[in-house]
Image (cartoon, rainbow, N blue to C red):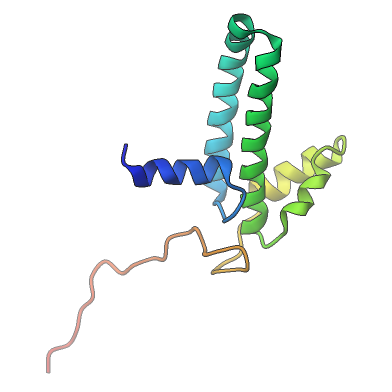
Length: 128
């Protein structure tokens, strides 16, 4: 793994700045949750409950960063995430808005558009 790839992964998982596409959000959220659910019982059994608290903090910070990046992609502040702990409404909002709403086209105040700009396959010029 190159240093550039490691830096991209670090920014994706542990920095709330920037924007993330829906596909990247879902894929990363599912993978992080699966790793957490697989490792949490093991960590608790080997190291005890107090170390597990740190594991939860790391998981929730990662989830916050992913959701903040999705908020930024749809042009909203991460302060909208205060809705998430609200019973029923917060979960529905997080799934529908963060999970299914398309991001703002083009750059916005939170960063460049994470969608790649379509490039033509070939440029044909007329010769005179």
